[in-house]
Length: 203
Image 1 (cartoon, rainbow, N blue to C red):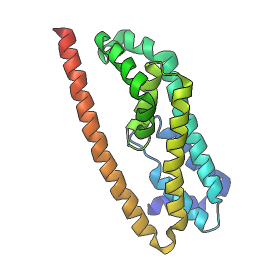
Image 2: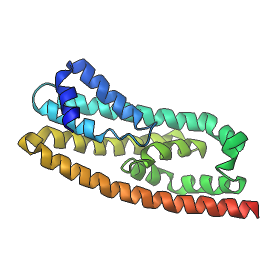
Image 3: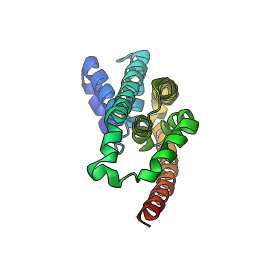
Image 4: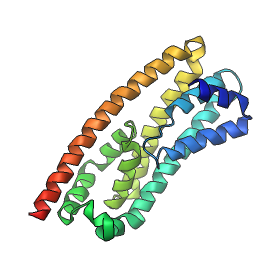
């Protein structure tokens, strides 16, 4: 956290906005890199008067949603061909396509909304929504609303932290740990379902 604050307080405001925008985009591509720490730090710097809190929120919100929509669009355009041919075919057995489409048809909006709050799933859920062929109207609104809630809370916490920044970051870190535990549990369940589907397809 100290490194993030040092970086954001030493850079010119336009560059800070660019760093925050890059972090918000990258976490849609590399699930292991959440931008939460930088965004809280950006809110804190805004509280010092260096940046606009509204500007910080607008930048991270817009670019996070834009990045998520981009990976969704790529999944929609190229995902099915990738998973039906070559090495990608090994990841999703043919018998699982109907189940994937049925899941997103029934639970897609809720899954996309909830997935934006969990590390790892933030990147994966939009991609597979595209692969499953879910329409834009059912993807963009939950992405937009969930990202607004999550990043709005983070920026606000940083902005109001003041001398309590360490306590705020401790609370954010604790929340992240619990969300990560849930993410790992969900990933384990999905991995087991995937393995079972492959065994059935092999039999």
